[in-house]
Amino acid sequence: MKVIAFLNQKGGVGKTTLAIGIATFLSRLGHRVLLIDADPQGSALDWAAARQGDPIFPVVGLPRPTIHREIDQIGADYDFVVIDGPPRVTDLARSAIMAADLVVVPVQPSPYDVWAAEEIIKLIEEARIYKEKLKAVFTVNRKIANTAIGRDVGEILGQYALPTLNSTVTQRVIFAEAAAEGKAVFEIDAEGPATLEMAELTREIQEALA
Ligand SMILES: Nc1ncnc2c1ncn2[C@@H]1O[C@H](COP(=O)(O)OP(=O)(O)O)[C@@H](O)[C@H]1O
Ligand SMILES: [Mg+2]
Image (cartoon, rainbow, N blue to C red; front, side):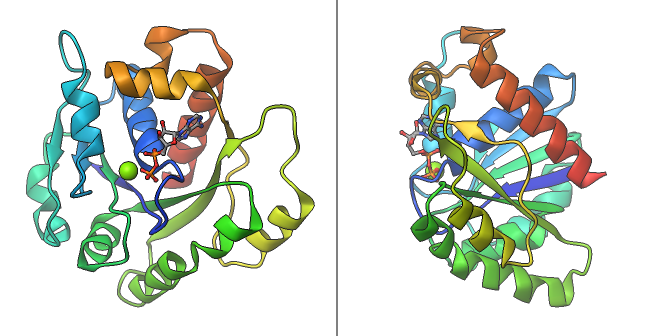
């Protein structure tokens, strides 16, 4: 069982979108997946509730700072547990980091957004004192189509101890549609660009965990 936590104290960067995305794509690959909604706002639970028909995988709400103590029991029957993190640096975020094998920090491609991730990076560095094997990466979300990630953003990302994944996720309406209908993007557009990007991100995340 591997645990992937999406964390950033900034809201709106895509923690929920990417957590759901990765969970759905891992599930499509045949893995047993559990999604833990650790955000008191419960957006991942809302996504699951919006779905007509059978769930793709179970989603449980666990907005308590005990995730790291419960994860082995809760996740025992799964290949992957994906944690959708809270929008604040609290005990909850700390608990999710302590539960994780890999922390993914989504950032939007602007210098302000990268700087805004500073607090969570500090928390990850603190956790590494106890948990040497903890892996952590940045991933760029909400990239504007047909634009390069600005050189300034690349340089700023390069100043942190976290590597940045090569795959990026573009700003696309399909993610809002998928959120509203409780669907995976591949159920809406199986060959579309969002599906291809998410598949590539999933591959890279699995590689980072290996
Ligand atoms: N790549 C994307 N393309 C289009 N909309 C996106 C994308 N990523 C996130 N969003 C939208 O932005 C909003 C915030 O994203 P969300 O995943 O809820 O962020 P967080 O969980 O970090 O607060 C949501 O309405 C979501 O649908
Ligand atoms: Mg969220």
